[in-house]
Amino acid sequence: MTDQPLRVFLVDDHAVFRSGVRAELAGEPDLQVVGEAGEVSRAVAGIKATSPHVVLLDVHMPDGGGVAVLNGVDALGSGAQEAPVFLALSVSDAAEDVIAVIRAGARGYVTKTISGPDLADGVRRVAGGDAVFSPRLAGFVLDSFTGRSQAPEPPLDPELDSLTPRELEVLRLLARGYTYREIAEELFISVKTVETHASNVLRKTQQSNRNALTRWAHRRRIE
Image 1 (tube, helix red, strand yellow):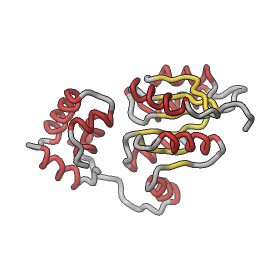
Image 2: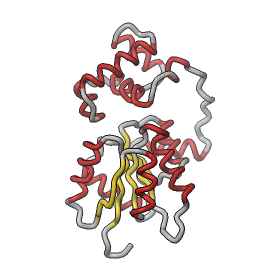
Image 3: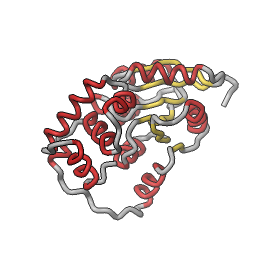
Image 4: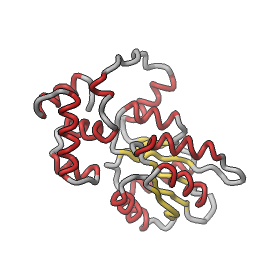
C-alpha cells in the first residue's frame, strides 16, 4: 500500500447507520470514506465512480442486497481500475448469509456489534489481503468450502420462506430475547416498525404469542 489513505465506500440502506460508521472512521487518518449508498444500483454506480480500496457492505437490502452489489460490480468489470475488496457488515450472523456473500466475492464478514477500532482494523486487514471474520463465523466458511459440512439441504419450510429478510432479522432478535426497543436500536428503525414486523412474523408463522414464536424459531435453529 502507498502512504495515501485507504479509500472506503459505505453501502447500507440505513442512513443513520452509515452516518455512525462514517463518524467512527473519521478519526482514522489512514482511512478516507469516499462515498456511500443505500440502494443496490446507486452502490454499484458509486463504487465504479469513486474507485474505493474497500467496500463496507450490508447484506440485507432491497433488490438483492449485498450479493446483488457484488454481482453488479463484477458485471461492470474494473477496467483499468484495481477492483475493490468487500467486507460484509451485517446484523445477521446466520451461516447462510455468511456463506452466500463470501461465495459472491466478499473478503470478510463482521457483524454490526463490532467496535469502531475493530472495524477500522478489519478494513486495513482486508485491504492488505487478509480474510476477516467475526468470532465463530469463519467456521461456517471453512466447513462450506472444505466440504466438511455434510448436512443435507434443508427441507422446504413455507412459513419460514414467507418471511422477508427484514422480518427474518426481527425474528432472530426476538428469539435471542431482545425487547422491541432493543431491536429498534439494533436495526435503526422505530419501535412501531418493529411491532409491525413482529405482528407479521406471528401471522406468517401462525404462532399465538412471542413465547410460542421463540420455541418455533429454536426448533428451526434460528438463533
